[in-house]
Image (cartoon, rainbow, N blue to C red; front, side, top):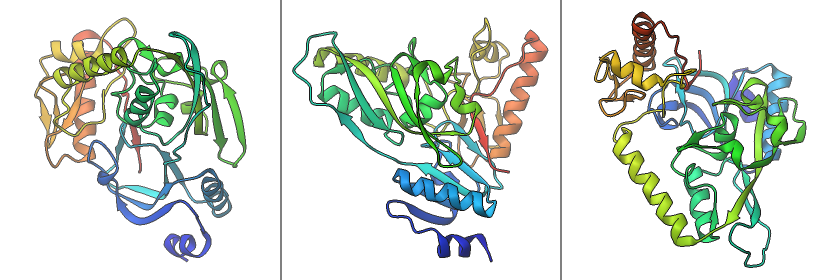
Length: 309
């Protein structure tokens, strides 16, 4: 029996959508990637449990993803089931008006997009998320990789995270359990799926919050190549050096392989100038690694995650 038939006959999901041979170029910010054999937009925790039980029972490969903003899917696509977490909740416990600076906890589903969380927090006059607001993707993905910008990281606002392991077991993890480090956490090292997170913000001034968000948005438009599909910062910052600066000093801005190009605006970004394949990106990033090592004797590491194969 084919995987498609197995899924059609066995998965009875209530709040999720199933697609077959779905082009992943439609679900990544890079606009690159071959087909996912089975692609599921997962809308609730019970559906995810059922998917995990099904993949374990039938020995089917499972790939978990968020909004596709920090990944490169191979041209050959992804075998088995790819589950995109779209669990969306936003719980704000009724509060008194509150004093400026007072801590307030908000619980959000892993599938909530960062920009949408920022808008909801603005309405509630809560500060502490302005720096994170412009990072593409969902809060689940941001927590998994400890995303950050403008001197602030997700770890600074996380109180606790509800996670599920690949056997369907659910547990609550506190900030200190998550072993946050630069662009990493225990969630990216172990098979743990973020379901929701409780974040801590402070009561603030709405106008000041809005102004900060506008300032950071303007900075991103000026400094980053938002006009082309990309997966965010391609390489991690090095130990004691800024990777983008080394790439720039190698004279690589504008260098391309096929449709993949090192941004002329920011050397830390590889962009899809049109029709780029995953292989173009891989060949280009390998070339960048070689040139940086030749000139500076420094090893640089990808920040984007490669899926598929």
